[in-house]
Image (cartoon, rainbow, N blue to C red):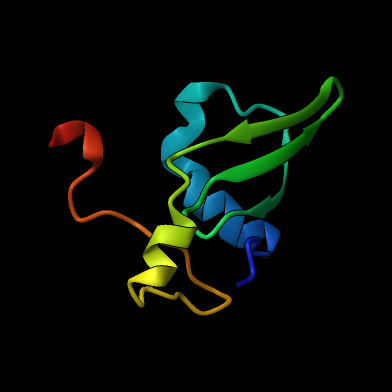
Length: 80
């Protein structure tokens, strides 16, 4: 199982548009997890935007995205 996803800068920008409220600022996306958790490089270190890490459980149920995809939820867990 590949636990990282690489995307072009333009793809990261589109995918992170709705997350600007968390002050991404000048942080540079490095890679993403299969669930879309994004790891960033910044002057003060490495940052991590965690959505939820359930990749192994999803894979064991046959949910395996290809290299250009990430997992998502029909209903976010926080909404029940």
